[in-house]
Length: 320
Image (cartoon, rainbow, N blue to C red; front, side, top):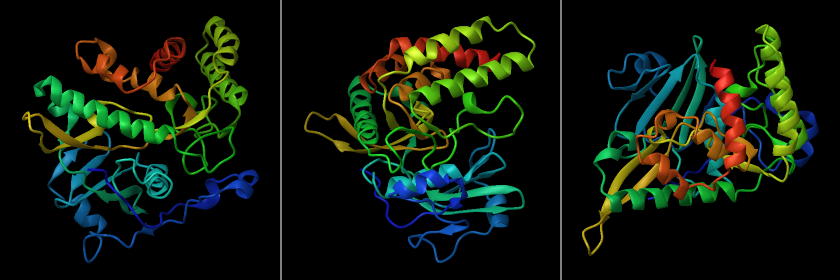
């Protein structure tokens, strides 16, 4: 079942660069935000959320289940742009299966996202126990969701690369290595996007006192590689832990079908059309290729081997 969402969203409009305002068809709205569709009489308070015993995840920040309908993600590394992504999806892309955002706000240094609880369980918790027909059904539904994303039309100029709220590229390769404490972008055009990646790699090389041979390779290769791609709406972290699945029934042959919801939209934005593929290959399942998810992913996404190779090189440099 596709998760349908309705209602406005919220964010500080200061992230939208002035040169874009004339062309914007959708705009973030101000914080704090509260939708009109909250399935409770009132929002849980920050103290109630922090004291919630039903912790679903606490790897970096916390995700807690208030009840069967509401989860809250909160912490110092939770950001408004993730909530803005959910807000954006409600309007031009309502058929993308994503949670509805009920509220977002700051409190005592933490940022809170109050969201719809996706029904089901994380795909990584059951993948190894699924039958081939189960996997085929789930893969087909994720492929449909990704296809819907990639067909969405940007509210920004056609050459825009950045977050869904019109701001920077919130991906680790764009974290400014010159010490500004900010992400780089947004960028206009493939040449600017490629230059941003190469310049940030050079800044990292220089700050680490390393030879610049690989940086020179990226400065040569990236402009050639980043030609003929288009800005595409991208989840940015497509892996089993970010898919929640729930059984919806069986057909006449006894084969199960599932609903799938994509969660964790913090890395989403408008990126080159190969970005979903190259990012997916930088996630933990691809460390050893011992899981058939690595192969099944090719049923979901178009294959971009050359782009993947160069982006994996950059990603490994960042980690090292």
